[in-house]
Image (cartoon, rainbow, N blue to C red; front, side, top):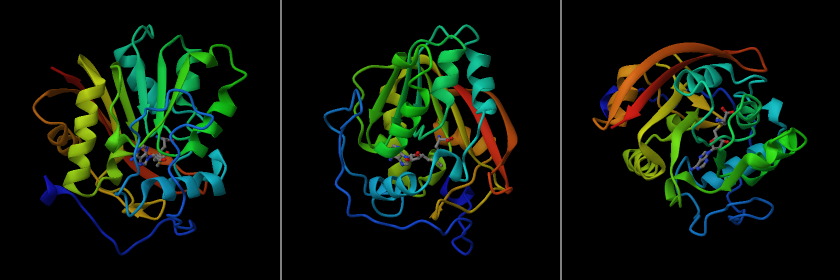
Length: 250
Ligand SMILES: C[S@@+](CC[C@H](N)C(=O)[O-])C[C@H]1O[C@@H](n2cnc3c(N)ncnc32)[C@H](O)[C@@H]1O
C-alpha cells in the first residue's frame, strides 16, 4: 500500500505549534481507567505524547483545525450501525471532541475515549461533566500504539488519527490494537484526509487515502460496509476533504 499513499513534506498547513518532547508521560493523573502499560510513543514525528500535550495545552478545543461543534459525520456513521445505542463504542484519539458526550445524549451508555494527551481528555471531560450520563464515559490516557486493552468494544471510531501514521510499523501497531480491542463482528468507522486533502495537520505530515486504500489497510479480516467523502470546515475557514469508511470485522 505504501506506493499508493501520498506524502508531501513541502507544504505545512499549521505551523503554530511548539514541539516540546520533554514532558514525562503520565499514565493517568485525573483520568480514570488509565492502563498500566501505557508507554511513550516514538512515532508521529518524535514524541506523540509531547507533541499532542503541547497542542492541547496551548489551545482550547475550538482553536484546533479539526474542531467540530457537532461531530455529525461520525454520529451518522455510528448510528447507521447502532441506531439504538446498544453496543459499546471506543473513540480512539478522541481528543477534546464532543463525540462521546453526544453519543451519551443519544442513548449510548458504554462509551470510551482514548487519547495520548491528558490535556485533551481533561478538556473533553470538563465539557461533558455536567451532562446527565457523563459518568458513563470512560477516559483512557494511553498511547494507542502501545496499548493493551483489558476489554473489547462493539464499535471502534477514529477521526483523523490513523492518517498520522506515515510508517508501516506504526500502522501495524494500530491494526494490532484494533484487533485486540474490537469484538469479532464489530464495526470500525474510520475517517482520514482524502487524496485531495491537506498534506499536513498540526505540523505533522499525514497520509491521505481513498476508500479502497483504507479498506486495503484494514485487510481481509474486514468487510467494507459503506464509504463516503465529506468536507470538514476548519474554524479558520479552510476546507478539508475526508474519506470515511465503515467495515465489519469477521
Ligand atoms: C487531529 S486530532 C483528532 C481528534 C478527534 N478525533 C477529533 O476528531 O476531534 C488527533 C488526535 O489523536 C491523538 N493521538 C495522536 N497520536 C496518538 C496515539 N499514539 N495514541 C493515542 N492518541 C493519539 C491526539 O492527541 C489527538 O487528540
